[in-house]
Amino acid sequence: KLEKHVIDRRLQLLLAEGVQFQTGAHVGSAPTWSALRASHDAVLLALGAEAPRRLEVPGHDLPGVVLAMDFLERQNRLCAGDPEVDLDKSARGRHVLILGGGDTGSDCLGTAHRQGAASVTQIELLPAPSEARSPGNPWPQWPMVFRTSSSQDEGGVREFALRTERVVAGADGRVAAIEAVGVRLTASGGLEDAPEHRVTLPCDLLVLAMGFVGPRHAAALSTGLGVALDRRGNVATDGRFQTSVPGVFAAGDGQRGASLIVWAISDGRECARAVDGWLTGAPSRLPTRGVHQAFGGR
Image 1 (cartoon, one colour):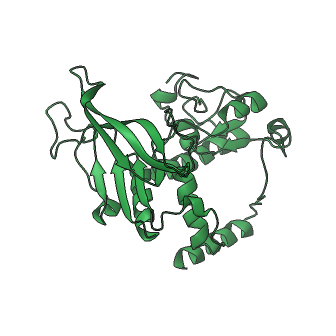
Image 2 (cartoon, one colour):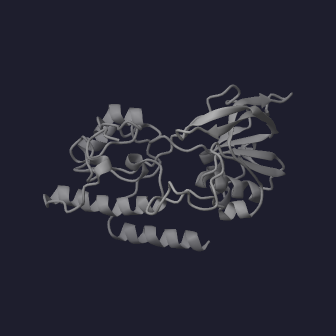
Image 3 (cartoon, one colour):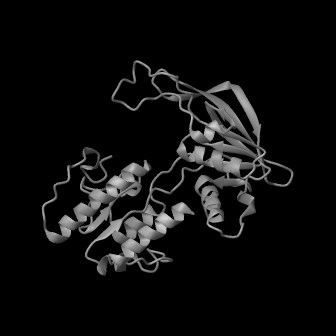
């Protein structure tokens, strides 16, 4: 209730400042991207990176296999007071397997516990990192060490170094288990199968939290608006948030790739400065970020 009060108050402040909100709009269809660009002096794309990495194995489309964002969004709607729908995505009374050991996977783990799952197991493709930094991971590099999130502290089983080979259906046609093979690091830092280690893990809800690969409708965005994409499928920018189309800007995960909320907040503020500078003709004082120096240069 407190969070809703804070959000509502912020929305009222924005409305008082003259910001107009148009909800329920399917941008790209009504209005089209070209119409949106033609009717505005500048456009900012803050689309996020919601296109999920898919599980390309037999059985990946069985009933009971759900995407992490669908699983989490359903819970958010329930918390907001919407009727309980999509019971097929509920963890209540079910044995839940989560593929993915990152932040999204941890969110799914905590949500599954709150929904009353019978058991929850979280699986990470990579081997478990060490408790301390390795000599090859010095400061100021991001420390590759074993971490436990607050959701993982609540319980559940964590498994590492497993690659899913097949999703197995039960007698009712719903997911009943996964078959996985162990993996190990190679001398070059890659992964290879360890065929001597194979497991079958039962489940009746499989949540895919394996990361994101760019904006959900990147191809349609590129075709309809003409913006260039980088090699990873994100919207390419020039280092100052402007895309290959003059007057069209992009900020957040849609141009950075899936990242942290603090980066999204920073991008929003800095991009607002860039848009203001472009509209007023003021030279931008934003530092150029090398990773976005050239369109498609990642």
